[in-house]
Image (cartoon, rainbow, N blue to C red):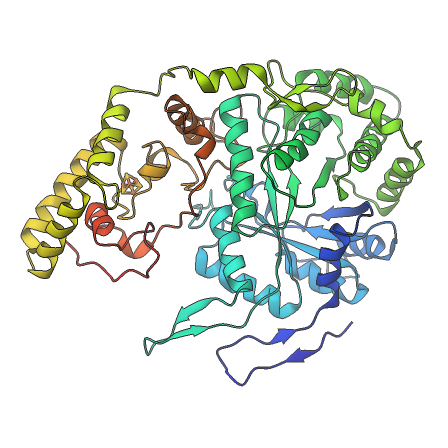
Length: 545
Ligand code: SF4
């Protein structure tokens, strides 16, 4: 395949390629026919010099299989450095197969991500799955890499959507320019396999924020509970969202089941019950192969039966195994999936569901929200995190920091006068007071673009390993951060907001993207003077106090 290239006269603008393949992936997921995709993971290190590497052979065999509609290529999974996804995508492009590239926020800042996105667009790769990404593993060169997380998944989706709309940029001469539009078909992940309400509900609400920000298709994390997969579609209906859902299957073996069970691959969940079953079958003569393949096929059949757009298969190392699983899935009877949906339910003890169980189907009942959840919304419990200092902070914020209200206009004028009068010493003293008090209360890192009003007054720089400003990543485990060194900030924020009957609106605002130009400056001044993320006009560089 040789896509046509049209080159703009403006050397600053990237070449635009016509790619019928990308458009057809969008059509495939929206076409009403259940389709299958396969996941490929690249390798660390250059491929073997003699002959095509096994990975390329596998990719080409999958591309040649008409049962598989697309191949998806991961981006440094598990936080490990690998060959970039578009290395393999470029090799597979001549096959004409639909290709999806994963793009994560852990290794590149927003400029690196934008640059990667322009490259993918120029290379003809328009199907992008956006993920926050796993925290870098300790397997980098001479130790662990510093994670980036300049944007989170919502920020990256917002940026790709802006590129699709024709991104506006300032030129060196100060003029605003609109770049050519891209045609990304943006996918988003959701992690429903969370045991606690305070983890699960922020996941669902964040999914809604991702879709509002520009995501057009959805893929859940890995888990083995069809009721939870089904609940995603119930939640989306409930929230008035309608994007195609791709069911996700990873073919287990005993080792992987153990890793998932211990949360060694963040967000991928295997319960103790399923682990015990995996260990029992793995002790058999075929090491459990038949059981694991059949489990994967049954999951795919359940996704199809539930009306998902597609099934996506990973953890398979031969094209034959992919084909065998899909054949098995297609070979079941039309209603067999209903039994599989009941059979493949391996929740953790006390797992929270948003919808009550329909005893007839074993799935969620779309007519009945979880009764104790509904009751708790009316009389929310006071969680330990609803501290006196949190309550005081809320009061002060509503008095002084709510635009247009109470003391805000006077403080706005006051800061405006100080800046226009060049009162640098007073501004510096106020900044020092601000930073000292916020350090004491929140562990403030002086980012200058304060997120506290959106995070239940918990500082993401101090209390979130990935500095997430738009909701939780998928890695939390039983309410704790994927690094297991603290409670998840977002579970705590949910508890705080729920006490004030605000949990359902937790992510209703526009996406929050911090501006690094403000680091080391007064967040109060930046807020009053319209320079922080809460204001839509591009900020001026503040004076350093
Ligand atoms: S978000 Fe920024 S300004 Fe606000 S408390 Fe954290 S580091 Fe400080």
